Length: 119
Ligand code: FES
Image (cartoon, rainbow, N blue to C red; front, side, top):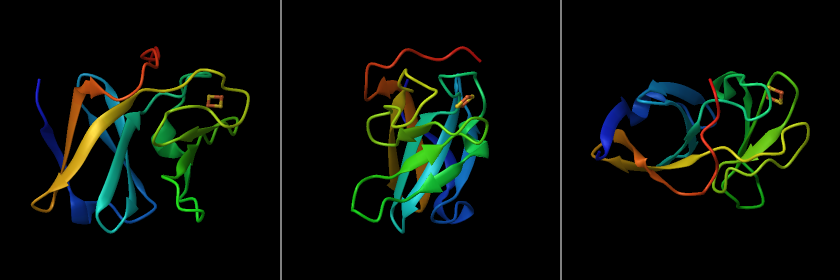
């Protein structure tokens, strides 16, 4: 597969999420004016939607994280690794780019080795 257009950039506010239904549900997170990250939408703890969660844009300059709104695990948006219990498994991170005012995702380009969560 190749990159697929999933949204217009101006449809996603900085610090907000948007769900993209591809072969897997993907949670898009806009982290600044020009950057969107893409992770699997399914929390690795009990399969809750991460798009329902909260975003921390990480003022230290990192890529930010998403906090699951069900039990509070946080996942790094660059590595997919959980930074807070109860989740212990990472979530898949996908290739995502912004081009010509649109957001593109290729879920065949998984950027880490996380198992795909059940959903
Ligand atoms: S379902 Fe996400 S932390 Fe439990």
